[in-house]
Structure formats: structure tokens, C-alpha cells
Length: 109
Image (cartoon, rainbow, N blue to C red):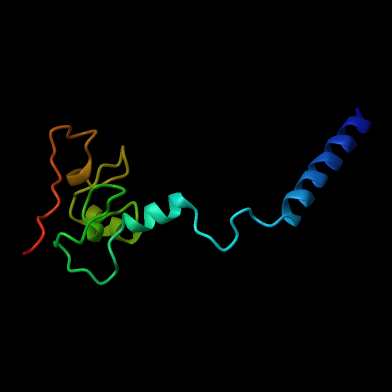
């Protein structure tokens, strides 16, 4: 039993050392998923409520996206707009409100 435990520890150490010594296959390059996720988010300087203020990942205004910006959560909780069961503002919780429509504002011409 003791020999088996030692063997397992040696294998774990060897695997850990081997994975740490290798460079990531795409080092220096953003993964396609990362690039898509970054493109799905609004730039920091957009006007809240505008067409550009949109979190494509979560389909809500970026300025109100608590999943991307957890610092917004206390404000939603303070106004009573919070679904504790799903961890979202009630005004964005499609599980509790399946008929809820969150619409992206149109582009300004």
C-alpha cells in the first residue's frame, strides 16, 4: 500500500513537472474563443443605453451585465432587482420571467 502511494505521488509530480515545462501551444496568440468573447463585449467608453452598450455574450446591456461586472450586483440588490435563485437581476432573469424580452437599442443613424 505504501509503495502504491509513493508511485502515485511520483506520477503526479512527473506529470505536473512535464506540463509546467512545456510552453503553451499558442503562446502569445489569443485563443479563438477569447477573441470572440472580447468582441462580444462593449468598449469601456461607450454611452450607456446606446446600441454599442451591449454584452453579446449575455445578451444584456454591458453597463448592466452583472456576470461581466460583479461590482454592479450591490446596486441591483439595493433596488430589490435581484433573483437570488439564479444570481441575476430579476429584470434579466429569463428563467423566472420566460416572456421577458431584452432588446438591444437600435443603431443611431
